[in-house]
Image (cartoon, rainbow, N blue to C red; front, side):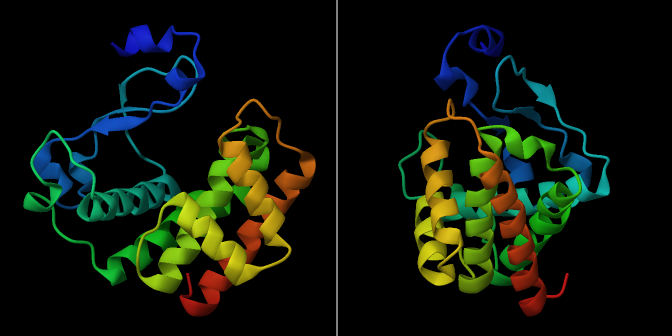
Length: 204
């Protein structure tokens, strides 16, 4: 199925992303059991087992895992599976904050040294909107959608981030639009700002 999807000349096909995870492994993050089948977004991507050896990526993966569990716990859409709350544990506010900090440290912070990926149309908007969600979680002890977190960040942070966040929201839905150098620089500044806010409240 995924070989067929990877061969499609379709933007929608390149946006598929997800993991196949045994039910027992959803309860909590376990480094021994993270080798689940996964597919990333992008043209020509294939299903693979992810093996995280880099310490920074391992922290970021753990952070992402916690957010996924939190989303599943809060989910309100009807699924063709048992209710997630019947087989996963709730995520505490403390765990959510630690996940946000781990994502900052493991994935976001290294972009300051290696920002090349930020020129990719799908990557730069995703990074900006993820920063909004991280800040929201640190402040509210809760998770929020990209849209809710983006609106909150615009109202809370004000300038100069309002326009950067707005362009990221537009860019997420228009991946054919090239990322402008001003937005790459703005994203790096937003990363520095987020790290400063996080470090003041929760020293990394």
